[in-house]
Length: 151
Image 1 (cartoon, rainbow, N blue to C red):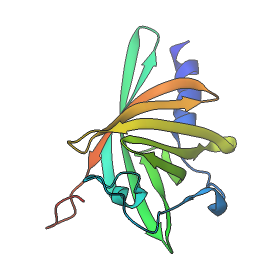
Image 2 (cartoon, one colour; image 1 turned 90 degrees about the vertical axis):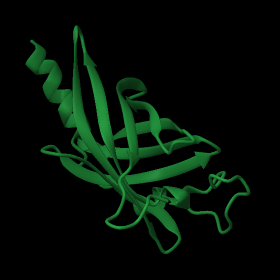
Image 3 (cartoon, one colour; image 1 turned 90 degrees about the horizontal axis):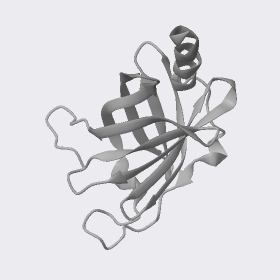
């Protein structure tokens, strides 16, 4: 019984189908005046890692996740990965102050909508929804590049 609930949920977290390139956010041409970049989505560029916590009745599953936000010709996009499950394209990235929203496409073109808050400590925490239903909590932090501090 639990296995039947786990399989579709992991399938939803197996990020393997790309978003259309037109669905990705254009980065602002100028940075916001706030010290953290304000609405500047370009401040997210780089690798972020953490966990997704998935409630399943009386138990909880915690899986590692990695999000790599990249800038390509002024367009912010990226790739999300769950080890052993797959990876796929991040798109529709919107930052409004400390709030960040983005979408990752799951199998069968099912969109995993992420909405979180960026703290002053550079931690993004929030919820993942599938079909407008919460399916997981996520928490990610910048992964420092070798020899360089996170932006």
